[in-house]
Amino acid sequence: MQARTKAVYENCTVLDISGNLLFRASRKRLDWYLSRDLATVIDDRTIQLKFANRGTGRSNEPFYLQDMRNACVVCGTTDGLTMHHVVPHQYRQYMSTAIKSRSSFDLLPVCMRCHDQYERHATSFKKHLEKCFQAPLEGRGWVERRDIGQAGRAAAALLSQHADKIPEVRRAELRHTVQAVAEARMPLLSESSRSCIEAWKQEQLDLSSEVHQGILRELCQMEVRVPGPDFCTHGEIVVGAVNLAQSDCAMCDECRTLVAGGVPALVVAWRRHFVQFARPAHLPQHWVPEYPCAQ
Image 1 (cartoon, rainbow, N blue to C red):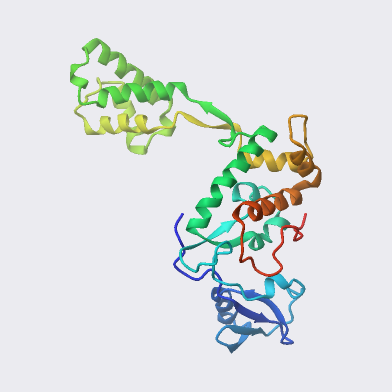
Image 2 (image 1 turned 180 degrees about the horizontal axis):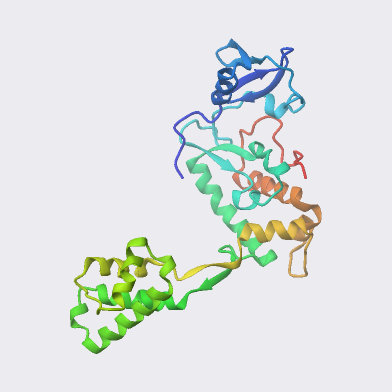
């Protein structure tokens, strides 16, 4: 993760047709309205809409109407800022659109140092959820492509600088393994490699051929372990169980309570975790873990 080079918040203002504060926005969003002649310029950071908007925007939510500081919410520094997802994306991406649409509440500026320090605690919480929800962090449903692993090892041997010292009988076995798997897995190979497969059927593999060596290199680089048709990510398993209120005796009391509270409880749990372990001393006004999120 790299620090941002631009300001996190531009704190521009959008007024409704009556001049009431509607919401805060970025310069890019202001330019969008102006380029379509949908607003007039009030000052350098303020525009007023020319049309009557349907809703009230964020006018009844003080958190979204305030000027936000471009400073780390943990230590207060203005250097090396990044945007921290209080509710990690690996969970939020599986939540309802209504909740995801309010994700800006859980995006806070944090400096690289504070971010790295907190992430160690976040990883511990993820491991706790992994255990309680039986949701491996690497996901569930991986498939081992053993033939590709075998072909990759054979190809690596044929590409090695000592390949010429391998007995010819053994080299023939390796070539046979490579050719059989390459033909069976042809759709996974590049177009140039696929065009060479037919030639393999008519002539012995020539280690001096750059084209053939390209096929060998492709086989070496293929992933042996890949997501299967029923693969689920860690976040998908956790959010799915919370959505369906699926708990079991293996869960701790905290996670059973979390499941009973549904997805909003999971959101609040991550917010509370951030407050407890990051100890932010410069949170924006009105930012509290219990701030409501839509179902």
